[in-house]
Length: 461
Image 1: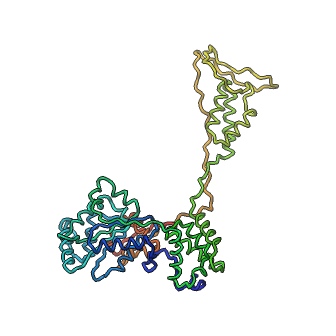
Image 2: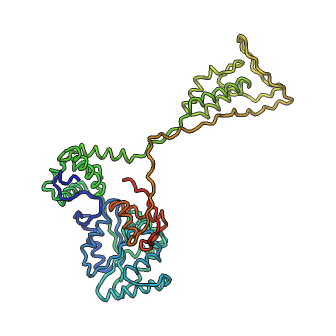
Image 3: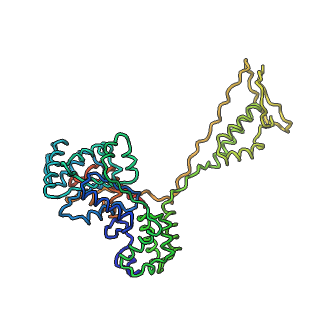
């Protein structure tokens, strides 16, 4: 990659949640300190929220790495689309309990409680971390409070950390979930970085990648451009800065300029912009044919019906076609009547069919006279048959949509490992739920050897 060109020892702006790159800013430092305090004092329920890309997963992993693994037993749930029974099964498996699948939820919960009491006696803590918790089914969320009842006289036996986007706060504010919301003892929230902290963040990551002087890699103006375009979101800054370094490497430019950052950002927006909506274009031949059909009807109909037919035609056609009808209306008017704008007309009861007066035209065409009717009842005018128009075919330049792929499970595979192999470590966390939904898989521990899994196409960044 570009590391040798810029004199770096590693990629500074990877999108993966590497705890080694944790930025020690005020928001992240406060979030980790809050979680450490809540776990140390055995508060029970903790919640960490923040917008997409602010580093929630990085904070959790940094907390788990800092804690004494001899005392802490973490259970990490990264795919929350599970029922409460499946969650209990996952917890019992992580605790090393060998239980019969038909034991039932009540007996499984009692077995988990006995194991937690044993670990508490050994001064060990179990922390259940549920990432993307806003996607938990409501029934699972409601039953989570049962796990908070696993306690001694003075401490909770299981610490639960819910990590999610701000929608999680809205979900828990619902009346049916108020019992769970009231049990959350500590709430931490990550906010976007300020401008000063964003620049410190970029310099911090470059220095961790062995940059002696970050301004030899990116100019001060380039730092300001990244911060302005990313709006203080660490993940956006990583993506934009990484693309700018790659583009500068290809152009043999060092340090990276602000103009290059803006160029890369503009190119990225153009790639991800939705395609323009296609406008319906009426084929010229079809419009012409429809005009001729209506003109033929006007030749044999009374003058009053001619203006009505023309008005209906204008209402049926698009604006461009309607304009064509308007511009061509004098040429297609019936030779036996002059079409004028219709003034408000009173209801006329005629004893005989009304026929338009013939215009003085040399060699007038023979116009069939409508037969007399016994009663003065106006007959409805049948709509002229309209041609069947075909929508324009899609251009050949449109690229085919990404296709799904089929994968066969091999021994040792889990859903997480499969997503890492298929999409890479950056995209796997966001794709795991899509893979589970596509294949109706609810647990990472129920994959059978030889099972066929459909892998959907990756999301575009």
